Length: 174
Image (cartoon, rainbow, N blue to C red; front, side):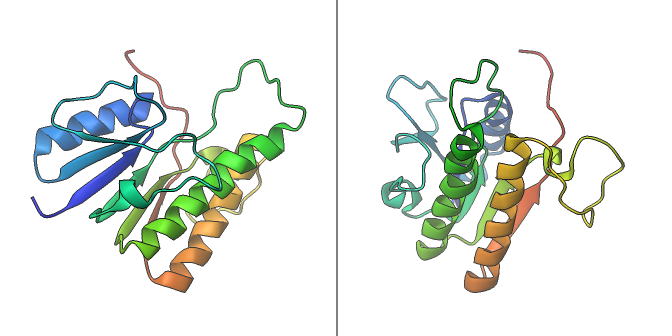
């Protein structure tokens, strides 16, 4: 195994499925970034504790030797919002936290950065394509749209390959 993939959000719904697939394929060394020591994962996966996703998170240890990042972590599904400024909180994690990780990934020599964005960056109605303009209507969609802009700018500056997946709501067993 010469390629190492770092997965953020590996304990979430999408992350759990991706992790299972990566481990089953056995084509990559797989590492997960976790917030705290209680996070459980497959024994064949390396874990690195990074704390909260933020504009100041230090990713140096997590990124050592990594060739690709699958960034699935983020602030989502806040049912009972307590923040006085939800947009600021979504931006802190989803926009600035994402761009901070990607910038450090580029500095560490990571070749590909896969970002799980959201179709919410396009708005709430319509038929969307890759070329559809950004028209988010809520704080979550705005933060994802702004993260995409920051990642595109970083790609232009660094040459790191950025892959953006605009997922609709994901559901299924579990």
